[in-house]
Image (cartoon, rainbow, N blue to C red; front, side, top):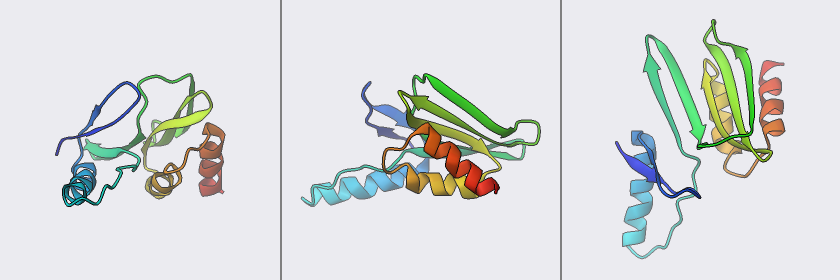
Length: 123
């Protein structure tokens, strides 16, 4: 259940079994000489007191932060940006949006694009 994700600051631990499965598959292919690159957006989720929280990407530092939705209702999304690019997302109660962001974040995207996707899902 422990895997790491390469970042500019060096490998960071991402402790979720799904990421470990994805990396394990790539590792096995590479052991077979396939020369595959692991390029998926890291993510994990956890549940506390009946609420599921999801985290996508990786941000050790950010210069932009947007919290949208309602913390008391446990239906929110937080966007963490670094130099205009969307670095990470933390959410609760926005499972469809989070699933879409897993796919969208495979390509670099801006914080503004993330917020626009949030607005599309609200509309």
